[in-house]
Length: 132
Image (cartoon, rainbow, N blue to C red; front, side, top):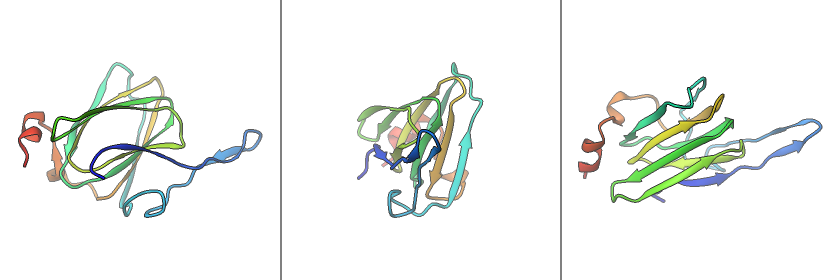
């Protein structure tokens, strides 16, 4: 599938003991996981993202707080997603522009299909929409 969509992950445990949610490559994550990173302490009045990837795929979680995503593909299809629960992940395939807004104290966890490569980024929106 070449568009972003929400993945539901199982929440295991009980409120008295706490919960665990598990992500596994090719079971509930549609790719090999080559990199994991998290962002935090992002001020809620800052818009992050502002980029797309040529090859990288991601599954992104809000492990704390709420994170909003505005996405756009090369055909101009736009979607909005809200991550507000640690058992919801947003799958973002390659060639999807994204802008991200964090709530106060939100923590974003990303599972990435590739190692970091600056050449994989579109950081200019006009270059992205002209890509064929």
